[in-house]
Image 1 (spheres, rainbow, N blue to C red):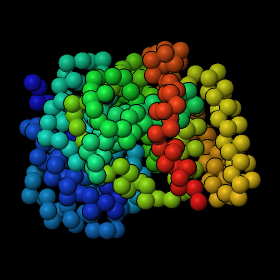
Image 2: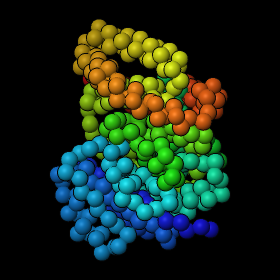
Image 3: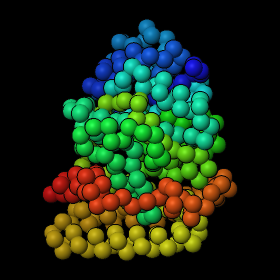
Image 4: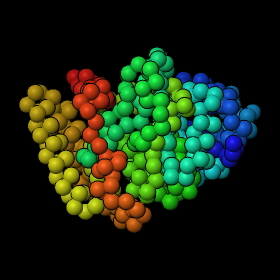
Length: 340
């Protein structure tokens, strides 16, 4: 088997308490040619000092210190620019990996040139018999739905299949990442993985699940400490961004109009139920999108330039609405529970 160099990029923001088990498991990976880049997004919890103190003797580990929090996608892009690997892995800091995970991912890439991006099976750290996700679906409006969330792992997803890749533990060919201009740093957080998966598909390559590669995840250990009302505007703005950048013009207009009606109705619904804070968050997300529309529109030109497949093809092979059971067990169930 090929042992091409793999760069594992771990963005970190105040995640010191996760870094020990994450880095130790990565460094124990059964793969001979890897480097680890910890990109610290201006942490104030001593993360940088901890990594230097405990892992600096391992020449495979490099720490990139940023002066402030530039967001998850920007940190990944910065790490990628300093990486030397043929393959780039983006790994959440609240994960632990199985020893053979990387071999499984690299083997698929070496054997199948049609694969542009992939992820492994992500199990819950607190209960490894349960699934965190095995990828996700993206529907025509840009809503995402985790596959297999909280299901008991009984081998029901143990086959390679086409999915939208999550950012928990994603691998991508370096040349593809560079051709697609990497993650969209204007997203800051939320949906940057979905957007990149969509662009990989537009470029004519597959995004797949490799279930033999096992990763354990705290499941939102860093992100979900944040209040829903704080996160929601990012989600809504970025959802509109995805549609504007990645669709043909006709589908951009159609789906943005429908999405505007949905979110306007939701804002009114929560307002009438005395959930004004949620309504304000929804409106903020839509306003942020309008303010940054020019940014998304400029990026759209390049995305459409590299496009190799039609929207009709993606409707058949990539963009889909899952069944009710899949939807009900997704993040939206959890998000609704967080509304005070």
